[in-house]
Amino acid sequence: MSDIPDYYFRIRENGAAVFRVDTENRQRRIEMDQIAVVNVKNGEVRAHGDRELSPKDMEVIRDWLTRRVERLARRDIDDIHRAVDHLNLTAQWAQSRATDEQLEEVTDVLLLAMHDLRTVLVRKKSERLVQTEDRAKG
Image (cartoon, rainbow, N blue to C red):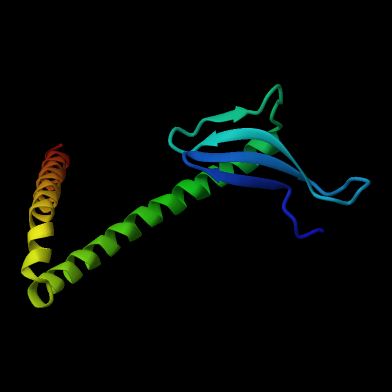
């Protein structure tokens, strides 16, 4: 049983429920006691019920939170790279295999989505260029 961690994080939509794992009991079975809830979006850690979290609890939770935020950020950028691949595959499909009916079904929504994305990307690039120029001057 020594391979079982002392804490378990049950992933939820915006974070996790944190459990302290106990294998040192008379029945030699795994017991999980919820000690906290973590919100990944704002970093909030709330003790569960009337519990007080120990410094070790907080250290483990903060470490998990840091790793989780990093993992989610990596997933976000990976999803964007996949979206670029899908855009390329979509262009190839539209050029080589799509029927007129299929193109009619998706053209307007694709054009609107691409226009929206282009608008956001151009604005953000402009903002970065202005910030770079301001830093160079200042």
